[in-house]
Amino acid sequence: MAFLDNSGDIILDAVLTDVGRKRMAQGDFKISKFAIGDDEIDYGLYNKNHPSGSAYYDLEILQTPVLEAFTQNNANINYGLMSFTKQNLLYLPTAKINNKMDEAVRLSSNGVIFVHNGGTAPSDGTSLTTALETDLSAADSKSVLNSNSTSKCILIETGIDDSSINPTSAEQSSKILSNGLADNTFRVAYDRRFIDSISGPTSGTTFTNSGGVEGVLTLFLTEDSALGTDTLVENYNSAEVLGILNTVYKDGDGTDRTDTNASVIAGPRSTFTALNITPKSGLKDDGSFTKFGKTGQTVGGAISGKTYDFLDTIVYINGASTNVSIQIPIRIIQFA
Image 1 (cartoon, one colour):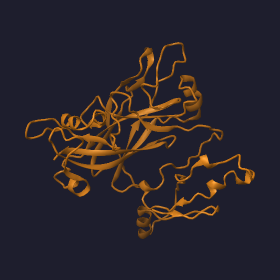
Image 2 (tube, rainbow, N blue to C red):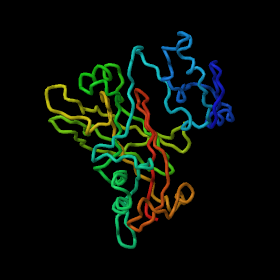
Image 3 (cartoon, rainbow, N blue to C red):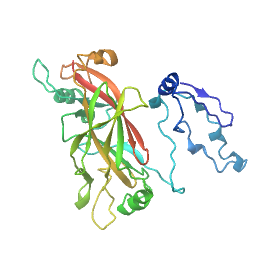
Image 4 (cartoon, one colour):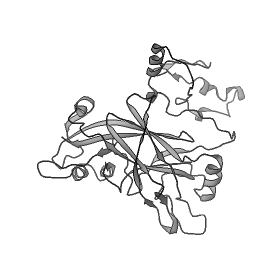
């Protein structure tokens, strides 16, 4: 990874991806689509009060060093530029992991979500969930997801994360729904070497705070069929999961409703999705933990006296309408 010097001129640094080089070697390479990103740009550097006048407002932005092009798609553009029919949009949705609901697992202090398939320790029959929750701190114990669970999930919310806009139903309608910024489906990309399948919400799943409650997540998950091989990221498959309207609102209709104890989006909410992840069986037998991860490790305070094998992978989530994206670090873990 490197930065390219930028004296203020527009720089285009293009390289072929691994797939592109493969197509060229096969003799059938052609450019049919391209993506543009601005991950390295801080638009907060725009200075409309620059003493030298308007020609200098964006000078620091234009002179920001740009990243050297990567060949791997998943190491390149995280925040791609988008085109929208409406040209006067002031706000675009973002995606965040919910860490407030009891049903929602969250990132641990070292930035991962632990996912396992269950199982018990051969010596004393301790369940993997119990051992992990014993070894981890009270906060990190909420980062454990059993793939067999129907009551826990990774809860992803989208919306305008700006507290200056009230998260009411009216603002949801005017800022999001009327502008086509609600993602009714999400594309989930996952490494097929380590993950067998992805489960997403059915239409019966709801996230609401109607009736004066702080927030209720009614969860119904179903396994989603893989769409096929993800041609942009090697070894990855993709699946499509539902996005469902988020009806957690601030009191704006005369009822006594709280919202901030349930939602992690500060402004109007858009849609949400809920995921569970089923790791592949036989990861220990095929040597995956040895080759790609670590074996015989203690976790947290090691209070249970158990050791674990684990490996890390990334799940990528993109909104179908807005391309809002988030990356979920997953640690697949089992007893050593």
